[in-house]
Amino acid sequence: MPIISFFAFDKWHGGKPGAEQLQLDHPVWQALPAVQSNRAYQVDFMTWMNHGVIANGKKVDDVLQVLA
Image 1: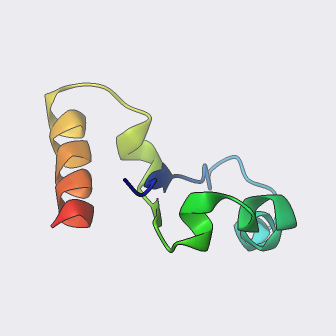
Image 2: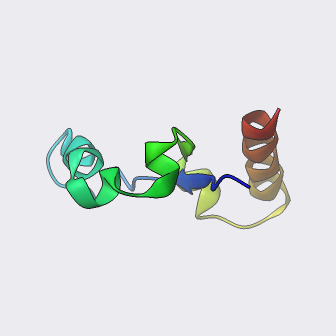
Image 3: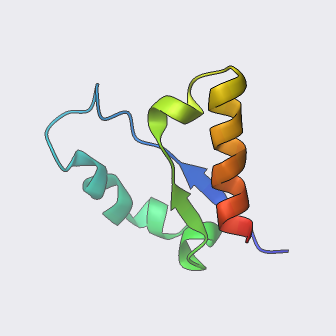
């Protein structure tokens, strides 16, 4: 079974604009099996770091969208 990964960036506390791309270009990130097989998906940070009925429903929606 292929590995699927979800990742989120906290852009509110990030450094300079575009800092996320530096992480995505890093060799360690590029070596991850999910990244190499194009199965790494960015999700909304605020949704995935919160709890509750609405946030959890949105997380389920994100997962179903990837699996569909």
